[in-house]
Amino acid sequence: MSQSPKKVVKYKKIEEYILGKIKSGEYIRGESIETEQELAEKFSVSRVTVRQATNNLVARGYLSRSQGSGTYVSSQRVVGRSTAAKSFTEEMKEMGKETQTDIIEFKIIPANKEIAAKLQIANDSPIYFIKRLRRADGVPMMLETSYMSVSDYPDLSYENISTSKYKYIEEVKNQTIDHSHHVVVPIMPTEELIDHFRCNPDEPLLKILNTTYLSSGKVLDYSDMILNSNDYQYQSIREK
Image (cartoon, rainbow, N blue to C red; front, side, top):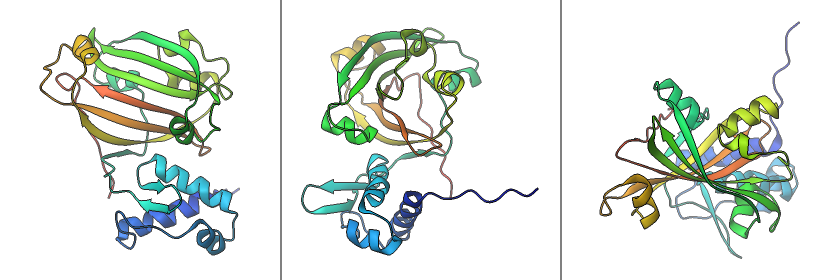
């Protein structure tokens, strides 16, 4: 029996439409895109559906919002994109390295406006604040701060985050991780980073702002990951 093609959810069609306009140059950096109402009428959907599409593109760094004046093509360049997300543990295993995780903080906090928007949840919703130092063969490679919804993962434990969050999501929660999107920015090392990485205080490090998506389209987590550039190099493969 032949399988019917997958149904493309409506907000994904709108995302693809907007991305196509950005990539073709029809939407120019710094300029506004069509209004929510115009897009809703074009695709015969509600403004809520349009907002879900634009929220995803804001989280991915393609769009930005200005209160009261609309949605714009972001002037910040999206540096890294990956169509398949890999965990730190998986990546290091492929390089033949053993991973270790130091859990610096693991607590529940209310989501501020910025993080709530990234996770696509209501302001002040309970979220996990997870701060980990990731090592490979004992060498500090990355300081990672992550945010996840508590209501979606009420059983997330210290044990889960001491190894691989992705393993917990896929093997315990039976959810499929689809892709992640990165924005990469240079930062100067703080005292905390110098202490962890023993790095040169005058040399910049790379900070990756990462949003991970499930196959359902929902956001799994939002993280900022600071790399020890002396030992851990960022690589990105772009598709044409």
